[in-house]
Amino acid sequence: MFNKFLPNEHVDSIFEIRPEDLKERGIKGIITDLDNTLVAWDVPEATPEILQWFKIMDEHGIKVTITSNNKQDRVRVFSQPLDTSFIYSARKPLSYAFKKAQKQMELNKEEIVVIGDQLLTDVLGGNFAGFHTILVVPIVETDGFFTRFNRKIERRILKWMRKKGKLTWEE
Figure 1 (cartoon, rainbow, N blue to C red):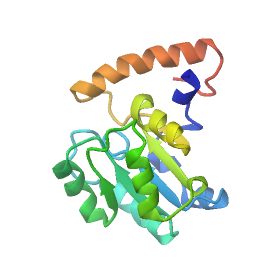
Figure 2 (figure 1 turned 135 degrees about the horizontal axis):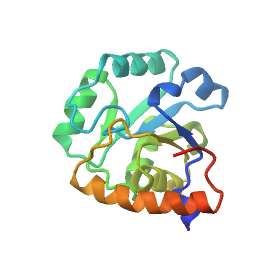
Figure 3 (figure 1 turned 135 degrees about the vertical axis):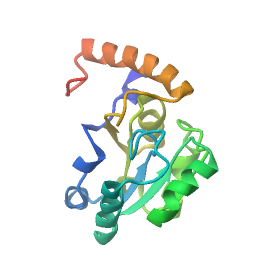
Figure 4 (figure 1 turned 60 degrees about the horizontal axis):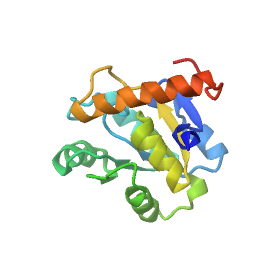
């Protein structure tokens, strides 16, 4: 069961995820979290760096769908200037939003990666839905109310994984 919390990959930042590397692996789509993955949870709009990252993905033909547990206004205001599809109130880790994003992108599971900063929502949900998962270090150490609770649980899971030798990166 705990293996479902284990991501396939771990990176420090979304900017380490390059379209050339994805295309080499046959990846044509990304399902990404928003808060603390793309920008800090309290930053309302995309930064210039995120705008550039989305532009580069688009130039390489990689589709990106933002999938967030946050409310419609938050996700819409962020996503519309990027001209990218989005799913709000996703209820991650339930697999519905992941499957909906896959259907919107018209891609096979093997052609999609799930990127996020939380084990309990992004990684668990992506793994349950059968996608390749990439855990990103959260952009900031502060979180919203519910995420703070999740982080406490995540620390225990990571400690257990480390003890069992399942982690291939340093915390």
